[in-house]
Length: 304
Ligand SMILES: CC(=O)N[C@@H]1[C@@H](O)[C@H](O)[C@@H](COP(=O)(O)O)O[C@@H]1O
Image 1 (cartoon, rainbow, N blue to C red):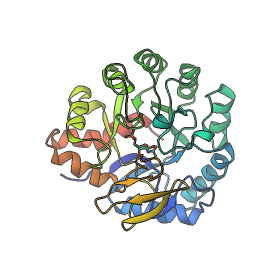
Image 2: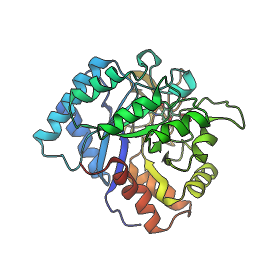
Image 3: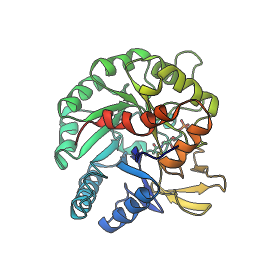
């Protein structure tokens, strides 16, 4: 499979560098960006997980200044805010700190977007948040792409988000409690909502092959977006490490998890590896892989 310059909408950091850390510096960001780009990713959205407002103010500025200073606007066209408007339920929040979850009030949404105008390109919010549909409409009116996830939303709430202009589902199959009702749960509801693309993490640990196959078959190649969800642990040697301010363990096989909660804490690989793993399942042709690893992501966030 030829690498067309993969586009990764979800990169939380790598090599011990956390884009959501209160200590992130411009040089840290550039070091991490260099590793991401040399791995075969042509363009990516640094992703900030659920954080206090002051952290967004600080880190959006740090990242934007570093990008501009080094002329990386094509490679890093903006950021993905994964939260803070998600569900605080422990299974839905996953690696996110529920203490920083807030409802998507219009003033809060506007305040976040106004920190670095035009720099937020994608927001993940919970479709079960209070007035989620209003927030989706507001974000879309400001030119921001919206994906829903980290929620316990039912099919009605997911449909309402799609009616309001949401375009995708963030890491479908992850960011839900370990045990869910067998028929009515956010995975089936997201799978069944034909208007929404499915972002999926194909790192070999987040989803079993049979679920990847089902999601790809149901959504079709035009509605699949592979993301790495690479975390600060990506690129580190196996063993204990720090991820999103918590202790984590990176197993020799590449599984990265928080031992206190048992939840995965992002992935340990970049998008090129996720694409190789998806290719090895034999579901998609080369042209379809290019859609899932590049074209659909570009379509989602639109031109810079
Ligand atoms: C940055 C981020 O949010 N990553 C999520 C994590 O929060 C969630 O816990 C995990 C497993 O989800 P699961 O336990 O529902 O499979 O998927 C992703 O790694």
